[in-house]
Length: 470
Image (cartoon, rainbow, N blue to C red):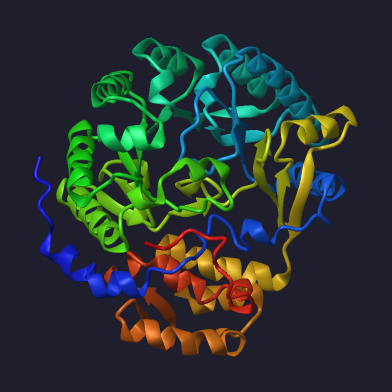
């Protein structure tokens, strides 16, 4: 397939522009971001949010739920990983965890009843395929017994290719999964050794072909650039191989090397990491290569084939964003189950305990395992609306924001409009009397535009907690 660099993309993603905007910043799967959650928000506040939802449902005031289940277990440590995980070879831990999940589900049933509709269900980790097929089937039965999973619901699972076979994909399809995501990261053998994740191209090729034959509605492949031993030349080969596999979606993430925060990353040789210049070349090659092969740039790190629901949603202005990233689902409450899961109910965010012991201790006491969260203020809701409009539609209509939040944009955001002038000079946005419009160039750097409206980031310029934009 053709992986030549498009002249338009080459011009847009100039070295100067990429270097200038290569700063740490949030990914805005929420606003305020999770680092702003406080311990003052706990299980009592979460229970109250659920009760308010239940009361609203009784009068038809709420929509379907989204559900996320975190399976923390992995059989092997990947050195780059910053996810909340438990490395173990003991398969019995999966069955024990299902007991915990059932208790947490039961707590939700007490507050919400068993009639709550679900339009989106996602298993992540860790590695959900650490559970065997019988355990996964049991989990799905548990969920369907507690919630009403709608016939057209998006039901997705993250799959570690090292723990999957074509038969497993067939079994998952029979359980009701219609979307699958494969963690690829990189196909180069030297890179795979450096990050302790060996999975040959041929094995992933077989799985993607089987998923297509089984008519999974969406097949995603995750890639990471900036890993140890990667070079622009080696990463181009991975880009070519992924384009040959033709997944319906591709996620291209930047590796954030934060060994002071994530202990597994201390096993990575800092000297083996690519330079900033090389990272820029990899990003540009990835974007240009996928666009040249017919993929639509959705935003941030995501690409999709034109016929995929995500690409259609972007064309129609129906993109949304939640803790799992871009989605076609309208803004809805998210129930997050399992260790470290982050959820959203009404105007609140919440996070479960990060350790299995703390998680189980809360359940033993009959409590939701919430350890921190946030009740959003009016200002939070206003800024979230602006940031999500930028991140999803690339446009903020002043009239709709002003009517919904009873504010005057130019009065409330006087300082922000001054900051936007600099981005306007760079060609990232166009500001009129009616709206803010992200340009074609700005769409590649939409995080930088959204950051202008982040009050917390303005007040706290220490951004090392975030990954870099590039």
